Length: 388
Image 1 (spheres, rainbow, N blue to C red):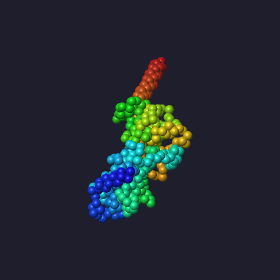
Image 2: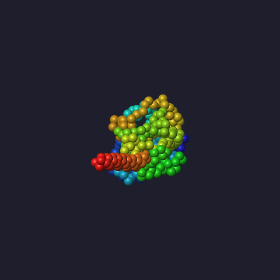
Image 3: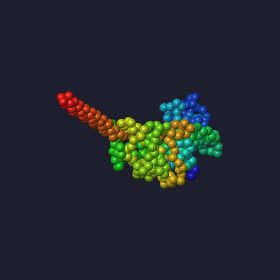
Image 4: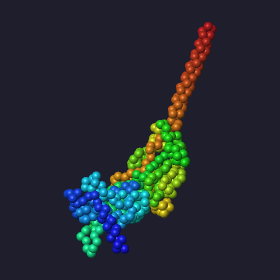
């Protein structure tokens, strides 16, 4: 066993870095808390560790091990000398629920602010450590034990606030970041129940009651999560705050004209509704509005529990925002419907006006003719009396 350990360490030492302490120049210094940076992306987590402080401490890139995984080439770091100072980069794919030994935990808490409608908001936390492997053979060592902790928090309810937080601790470096899966989600409108033909909206708008098939799709997302629509509504503004809105469905209450086909069962959710118009746009030839959805990513084993009504308390006005924080929604392109009877009404009104004018003229001519007849009769009678 000791011989095997010695052999592995010897191999690691022989794979020396391209960089040496002299190459680092002014960047050769002891390690600090800020030596790691973390980018929490939608598809992967990117780590960047300053390599010169590690070389200063007696290590090279082959001696910085991610989550104690030594035999997987995809979990090894790569030196990037194109930046100054040079860094050692690790890339952790999120399509694997335990990517390179990362620890995945899901936490739940009551919703606040814009999420006060929900009593259970989940966040998934992905964390791990890059640690040095001391090549020293002997009783003592003079090399510091380097530890680089990372952590990414991904909210699973999709009104997203993306904030970066740097946290220092007793170890060499710790970095906690908030991430977002928002770029994996999209909302599309279709014209058929099979969701194969994108909805074509004519320049004059859709006919009222035209079925609008709506789909929210997750793309390149880890298979650990399904898409669950918590709420979808229409608003007259592309930005749902402070505008007229109409709920297509809210927790435990689906509008009678809305049909949900699939929700919380896969990585897409589907529903449809007939085209309508907003009454405040009744004097316009075209009614324009947008569809917005609050989307939850639920773990496959917990999606059914989130469909229960006991976790939800009331419907929330979408104009309420949490302390003015910036957020994103899953929204549709504009939907336009035409007010079908407006032109016909104008034509009928014009025809009615013409008919009324004709009727009035006929009455006037009749009265005039009656007066003329009376005048003639009066003149005849008066003439006969004069002749007598």
